[in-house]
Image (cartoon, rainbow, N blue to C red; front, side):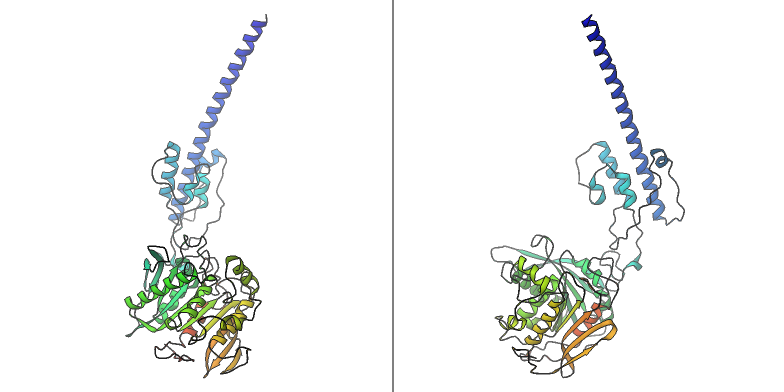
Length: 455
């Protein structure tokens, strides 16, 4: 009797297992068909978007799978780098076939097949519209000049065998005869040369005036967030980076027939810190410097102290900090423009005040106590910028510009790029208008450098 009951119970369990297995196989087949239907619907949506159709067709497959119409917003792709829908389709097919060989997919397709249709809907292929940005340093660039990306073989750091510095270069059409000016642009953390070019729109100013624009780019190998080591002037860190940038600048001056008396350097945030280091260490290479949202110089000497400096400025006397530098005694001076937002919550605006005083001292306009030795001061507020100028012979040598309401961003730039805002005064124009007032004469080794307005 017990054996009969046991066998009956086992047969029942076997039948139940078979029923469950059939149910699982049917569910798997339904799921695969749903993924195919979702993907097909998404690809149809891509084709419809590419043709810029105003009508929206409902997908029969989507209705069957219960997904409905997609309502995800269309995100802008300012650099025109969205993956093609053909690549997405091939990736889904390869994943379904279970193939793990070949080149790993890039972009959204690299995230797997679990939500392939949803990814296709949320990352549509956008038609390229050159009107959405005033400067796009890619194959879709619509500016008048030439944008190139390359590498420069710079002097290696001690112990290294080779060092390549990446950079972007914009060369506008020539305007008349004669040599052209060069503006060196140093990006901030988490930026690339392309993003900095697009965000600042400096290339558009270059088209107007005919100067060349150089964008050195920090390597992720040197710093994971592409930050310049502005706080560490040693030969293995910031000092090495500054020397590499100068080597690149010398090469561009020679290759592109640049006027060596009109080479300028500008930087944003960490790039401003590096620009200040270049202005201090290599004054004969540059005619003027621009520091946008930058930290005070000489206070930080490590990554941790750099964060403290950015947050509060220096607790020491900024005049003594710059006067205590080894380069101070023989420094010929450096015209400087400082641009900062009064609501910057990354680099405190106090840094801008201290930076301005440091360059006033570096140009010997005041003594160690801050007492004025030469020139005069002038305050103004043109176009929403609160400006304080230290003048010499009616030419601004140091200009401190404070932009109301601006946080840690490049004012008047391309708002599609992080750390840039479209609102507010055009920082690029403010900076080049100041640069035009100055040139570095090779025969001048005493202050002040001769100011000359360049058309």
